[in-house]
Length: 359
Image (cartoon, rainbow, N blue to C red; front, side):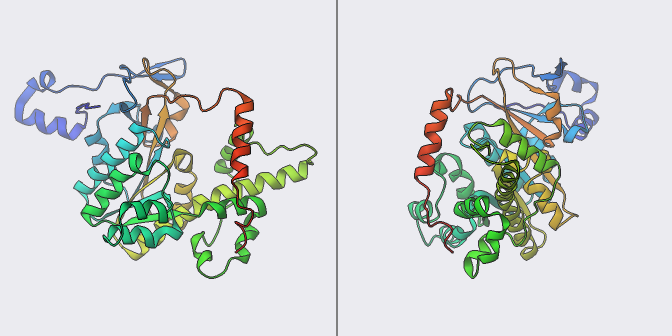
């Protein structure tokens, strides 16, 4: 979407000073957002999966307003770490990530890309690719890249490679997440040697808004509920805690990866990409990075798939999800029938390696 809404007050003032009162006739103004029955209604439609609308909220500190990419990037350049939450595999979500990364580089070239989509154990492979020592096919195979790497993440990694920028493989290995979910944080106690470096030194499992949010997600999402036939309340509580520990193993590892890189490279900014739940409302990974370095200035872009692309809207309660909201076209439902969900879960479980926790 090539919106050129010039709403920056400084830009308007400077132009007004040079061109006089005619500025009102020359500068396009962003269409207004209206609030109806607790929803903010956009003044224009989303036309395709590559279309998007950017809305500034500053976490509720300003009235929501549509902005353009230049305005947003100029603002985000003043932050130390910029989180860009994503809707995995969505064309517009990944397109915007690429635009933000290249835009930030143009304003501050001492920047690195941090990715949930590569595990810490793959950092040597990522580094070899950036150095030109291996090809992309090897990166994808040996680096265990996500299935949609070529369509979603290649543009950012290639930008980093050509500009000589670091790419941080920030995530904990998936099998370790699974093992923490089964054994709880005690799993970390029996890790030694190199594998111990692939997961955060400390997991923050305390009560708080993020834990409440995650447990609500478990309770409301089919396929993620912890209830089982014959389980006692105590067993359910333990299982919920271990599932949350598994979740924060991701958040703490990504936060620690960012923190360690910044400690080793003073003055460097980071753009980190992750699934939107990990950074929504500056919780999750963002919150855990703040625990490690309280003085950092952190920002988040949060994606929202609208219900009706012809009349895009979002609930007023979502203004606190990030300094900016990214409104994008809705994707098809993954499942309609519970039987299909059950079959998917069974196929997933059938692929689980029974020896994955044997470290």
